[in-house]
Structure formats: C-alpha cells, structure tokens
Amino acid sequence: MEYSLTIKPEAEYEISDAMLWQEDQKRGLGLELSREFREVILYINEFPEHSQKKYKNVHIRFTKKFKYGIHYIVEDNNIYVLAVLHTSRKPRE
Image (cartoon, rainbow, N blue to C red; front, side, top):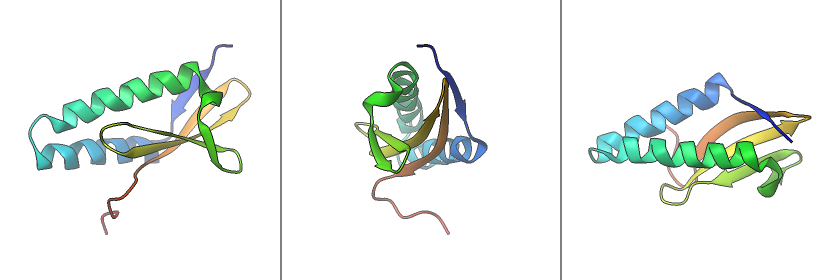
C-alpha cells in the first residue's frame, strides 16, 4: 500500500529547532540529525504500522543516535507526523 505523508507545521518547527540546537552543541550535528530524521521518516512512510503505538492511535518511532521520538498517526492511506520530541531534554520555555 502506498501512503501519503504529511508533517504538521508544529512538527516541522520541532525538527528545525532540534537541528539548530544540535548544531549549537557541535558543528555538523544539525546535518547529521537531519539525515537521521530523513531515514526515520522514509521508514515510517514505507512501514507505518511497524512502530509501537504509544497512545491510543499515536505511533512513535525513535531515532537511534539522537534520542528523538517521531509521533504520528495513520488514517487510511495518510500518515500525519504530529510531533518530534527529544526523549530527555527539557523543552525550551
């Protein structure tokens, strides 16, 4: 089955913010994180039901190196990425 994947604006902001934060920590980490996000998003698009369900119908797929969780739902042939959250870093206030 072929799926259409949409990243919600809030999740796009969280991805951008995460890449900037990582780049501030060390030059090149932002790009490395971007690549890892891309790999996980491609995996989700190909195998949306292979990730664990965390809340009711919300799936979560974790990145490996950077410890982010990509939260998404599957509705018919559509995948909606809702949030991208670090598993241990406190959100900025």
